[in-house]
Image 1 (cartoon, helix red, strand yellow):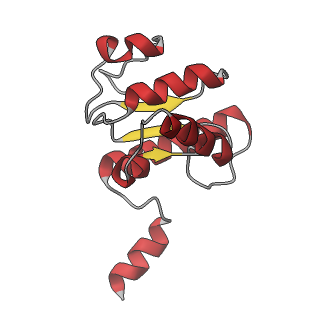
Image 2 (tube, rainbow, N blue to C red; image 1 turned 90 degrees about the horizontal axis):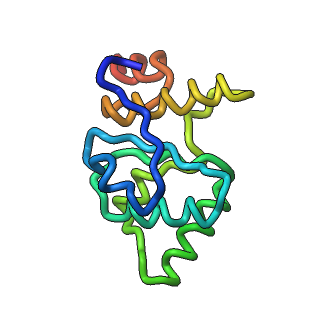
Image 3 (cartoon, helix red, strand yellow; image 1 turned 180 degrees about the vertical axis):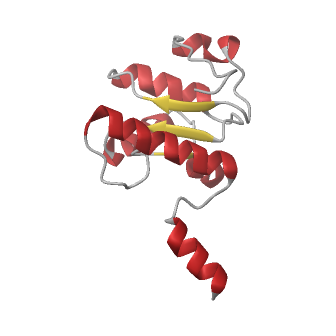
Amino acid sequence: FPEGTELVHAEARELSSVIPLDERTYVVLMSHNYLRDLEYLRQLHNSAVPYVGALGPSERLDRLYADLASEGVVFDDAMKRRIRGPAGLDIGAEGPVEIAWSIMSEVLAVRTGASGEPVSVVKRRDRD
């Protein structure tokens, strides 16, 4: 991790008091406890966080959205675009190390505004 990067473990209810939920904060969400993840996502609602990577199947994220919506916490399209689930780029990752690379690649693409497409495809399109 580059200098100045910090890993913070915080309970959901204290999240916004422990870390700034601003445009420089990137989140990967999976506590292996559904109710805890529900609360984390509730705390991230309407934050300025540019990336939330949700680990696990997309159906789990859909269920989180539905449960929050039933409480009146609705994520607009702009916020849903910032939440990526399942997290990571499709690079055929297997195992924790490769999945971590996949997620960090997606975070980098979001941070730099890149597409996450292969460089050869982007360069070819630029030439055409």
